[in-house]
Length: 223
Image (tube, rainbow, N blue to C red; front, top):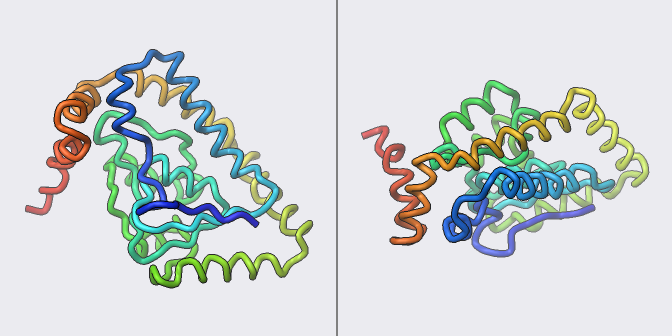
């Protein structure tokens, strides 16, 4: 049994945007190497013979959500938030595992809007996570689930994971991930105006200012 959790203030806020701004635009070959490597690392979790549980607290965004989805199960705290803000600054999704977990219709809504404040209870309702618990109980609840699984015959658990994953594979999951890498290369290497402006503000004013600029159009929707 493996448990994957964040060591800091959040599970994973996604791609390092300051590093992206500092590196500047990359060509399609460089983006392909970057994205293919990221997708391959996430698929290693899918392929791991043992069950992998994501233990999520606070933010789980963009590539962090992909990372969580590559795990077999997810236990999160009430303070967790999920989402894919990538589209809001001209970026794409790394693995496109989301439709395989929540279905195409809901995946389109989340990805098209770039919503990044999906609360834990809503994530539970749409099938993004398995269990939601108070933050103070997160460690114990995750270990309780791991121990519950560990009571069963290890060979059967591993074989069952492989059988479930095989359903995804026969439905074209791996081909879908590979196709998404190719499409995301086109998105990332296009260097759209939104992306260039986000990088400029990050370099000149800092990441906090860049995120405020990115989100200004969306935070005022209800005003």
